[in-house]
Structure formats: structure tokens, C-alpha cells
Amino acid sequence: MKNFLKSCILVSLVILATSCNNSRDYNSSSRATGWDLSGRDGGVSYKTDYEEQEPGPGLVFVEGGTFTMGRVKDDVMHDWNNTPTQQHVQSFYIDETEATNVMYLEYLDWLKQVFPPTEERYKNIYTGALPDTLVWRNPLGFNENMVNNYLRHPAFHTYPVVGVNWIQATEFSQWRTDRVNEKRLSDKGYTSRDAYKNSSADNIFSTETYLNAPSKVYGGNDSITRGGRETDRKLRNNPDSSNVYVQRRDGELLPAYRLPTEAEWEYAALGQSSLRDYNSYRGRKKYPWDGQYTRSEDGRTIGDQLANFKQGQGDYGGIAGWSDDGADITSEVRSYESNDYGLYDMAGNVSEWVADVYRPRLDNEYNDFNYFRGNVYTKNAITEEGKVKVLTADEVIYDTLSNGKIIARNIPGELAQTSIGDQETYLRTQFSKSDNINFRDGDKSSSRYYNKQGNTVKGEDMYNSPDNEVTLKNGEIDRRYDGSSTRTTLIDDNVRVYKGGSWRDREYWLDPAQRRYFPQDMATDDIGFRNAMSKVGSKSNKGRRTRN
Image (cartoon, rainbow, N blue to C red; front, top):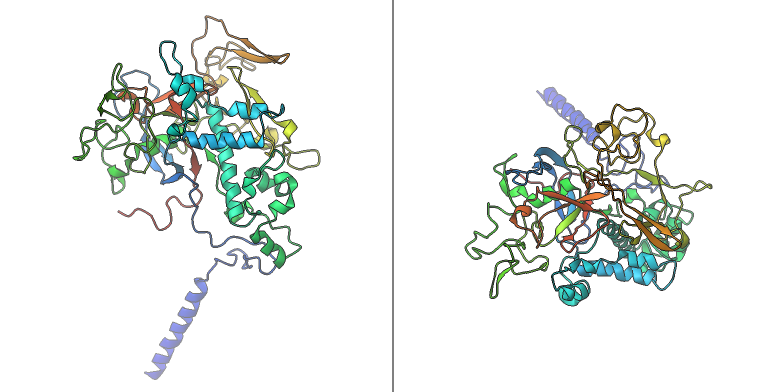
């Protein structure tokens, strides 16, 4: 009996030892080689205690999933441009509210301070970012109050910014990315304290420049890029170390702010979590809120409108003393109840730019995951010395828009970009060229001239839109309008989707599935925007996974 007990104890100890060996903690050592990953022994350091992405300022988390994208009711307008299709989007973050006037003014004031418009070489950087305040004018209306006051008067600070075209919205997104990451590095001690408060044309931070050529940000000023307390600590521990800059693998820098894709915007606007019953949705949503009507059914607020939109002919907000929606033009953000994701004004107030180039149909036969049309793949330009090219003040690239406005597409301190070529596309199965805007809807193979040899010639494009030209001649804008009577559409590669109803729209357009398009370089008094940010890591936030 004693021998039997001894044998059992011995077997148990062997099993326990084997179990302990198999459950080895690989958080600080390599599962591949067993090497230390902390960098203490002079090896490469990896961040092994990363927990969860921090949301950027103003953002709300939206857990991704599958949903029916497109209309779920009759197409009374017969546009046939939002046929329902099953799509899946990854988790992402999106602004709680639309971008406000004060948010955009912060951008304008920064540009004005860093690139004084009084200097000839900088003047178009600031003026090109200015919203078009004349969008408020109407030949048969008196709206000069909004023309003069809407953007800058403090009474309108928390109202959504309008008069911003799609290009300006994307440039704002890039600026926001850099300013947020710049402050994060300063606050965490990787750059000198309050470095973000002392920018100038020759002393600028760019996220991509910092990641690719950190010694060239802030004009190459080491006292800023290596002047933080955390960087000092690294240098004290290893004076010869060149690994003092934050890298992407450290997880300190946030992904880019950007415009949401159409699929992301529609998914976020619907906010279908209230319809979820275990692993399926029970029912459909017509609006971002529950119910089939635009008025509240709650006992406390019964009868109140749930969004800011046009009530009827000549009725933008009801009668005096009994306003239906509390506004006649735009309203302050957060004036109405949020949807299930905590997002405000996803229906009404202003329509919103999204990232996609417009086409009448979604090609779900080719892709049903993170759908997006508008990919133009680029790479960092490389100098003859084999280094990334950082733009100087004399190398800013400007675009002349169709209305003659000049706008900067980058600013000094950013990395120059160039289109990818055969070296990147040769024998690839995913893509074969840089510009994929017309892929399967607009290219020659998708047009009626698909069987003709050679490249598409003028007049054989799938979308026969007007071909207006704007050129700069002797310092003057030369505008040439296409007077052809054979044009059949306004769709081209420069029209972008905008979503959601606005204060000018009737109830029909409050449906998140509705989609319209507008030239990317033009603006109106009822189109604004909000930013989104991709999520890295797991689908759901750790510790917050939804349970059945």
C-alpha cells in the first residue's frame, strides 16, 4: 500500500512539473526562440504589456460586425443606388458629434500662426483651408447674418461646421492626427515639454515623418525630439542607443483620424445593438433611433422631434413658442438623444461627407468586408541618397480646384508621396495598379467598349461626365467649361458620397441607408463631417465583451 501511494505521489509530481513547463509565460520571452523580449540583455525590446488602444479625443468605440447595408424600405425615388447587401465592418472609433465650428477654427488658427498668410509662399495654405461662408447666400433669401457670423461668432462655436468641401475635411483629419500624436508624445515625456505649443514653418511635427525619419521632425532639432524625461531615461541607461524614438511597435501613437467609409458611417448610424437578440438582429431600423416615426414616443418627451430636419414646405422648425425641433438652421451638437452607440446627429442637422467615391452600386460580389471605393495606393518618395523625402516650405504641392480655389495638399515637414509602380504590383493577386477608383465600375473592362483594343480614348469612358478645365495662366485662373450637349451623367472620379439628412432635408433622407453624391471640391450650407479612427487589436474592448 505504501509503495502504491509513493507511486501515485511520484506520478502526480511528474504531471505537475510537465503542466508547469507547458504553461510557461511567454509575455516576456519569445515563443519562437526563448530569448528575452524586454531588451534588458541588449536585445530588441518589444512591448509585451500592451492592453488596449486608447480612444483619441472626441471618439466613441463602435464594435464591428455584420449588417444589412442599404435600404430596408421601398425605393420611392427609384434611384436604385442602395440595393441591400450583407456587409461586415471591423471595429472602429468615430466622433461622438459632427466637427464643430470651434474645432475647425482651432485648425485655421494653427495654420495662420505657423504659416502666416502675409508671406507669399504660405498664403494659399491658410486661404485654401477657409470654409466657403458664401454657401449661405440665396438669390431670393437674406442670409447675410450667417455669412458674416456662423463660422466665427462664439454663439455658433458648438454648431457643426459647414462650407467645408471633402478635400478640406481630409486635410483637417491629417492635421488632427498629427496634433493629437504630437501632444501624446510630449505628455508622455518622449519629446520636450509643451513641444506642440511652439510650432513654426520650420519646426513642425508629422506622425509619418516621426515614424520614418524621426531626426527630421521639428526641423531636426534634437533638443525637442530627444528632450523629454522618458527619452532622457533611455539615454542614461544606454548612452549609445539609437532606439530612443517611439516606434510603431511601442503602441504609443494612435492610428490616423480620417473620414469614415460609407459602410462604417451607415453601420454606426443605425446602432442596431437594441435589436440584438443573442446572435441575430430581430427587426429592422428605419432611423438611428427605435421606432418608425420621427417623434418621440417617450412619456416625458412624447411628440418632440428626434432630429433637426425640414418639417414641410416653408417650415424648418415650427411656430414661435412651440418649435418642433428647436432649430431653423443647424442646431448645437448634442441637442437630441444619441443612438445606441452614443453618437449624436446621425440623422438631421447636417449631412456628412464620407470617404467613398460614388458609384450607383456596391460591388458585393467582389468584396463584402470593410467595403470602400476610392483606394489610391502610394508609397514614400525616396531621394537619390536612399532616404525618405521630407517636404520643405518651397515644395508644398497645391491643387487648383474646379472652382479656381487653390488648396495645399500637404504642408512642410510631411513626407512626399509617389504612386506605386510595377515593382510593387508585379504578380500580385490582390491589386495591379495604384489608382483603383474605377475598379470594376468605370474602367474600360466594365464599359461597353470593353472589347476594343488599346487604352480608353476620350468619349469612351463609362461615365460620360462634363470635362471642365481649370488652368493657371500668367498668374490668372483660366476656366474652360465643357459646353458639350452629349454628356449623360455627373458621376466621375471626383464625386464623393455624403450621408444622412440635414436641416434642409425632408424626413425621407434621415434614413441612414440613403446616399447622395457631390463634387469633392465643392461645399454647401448643409454638409459637414465627422472623423473616424481604425481600431487595432481585438474586435471588442478587453473586459467589455458583450455576453448573451
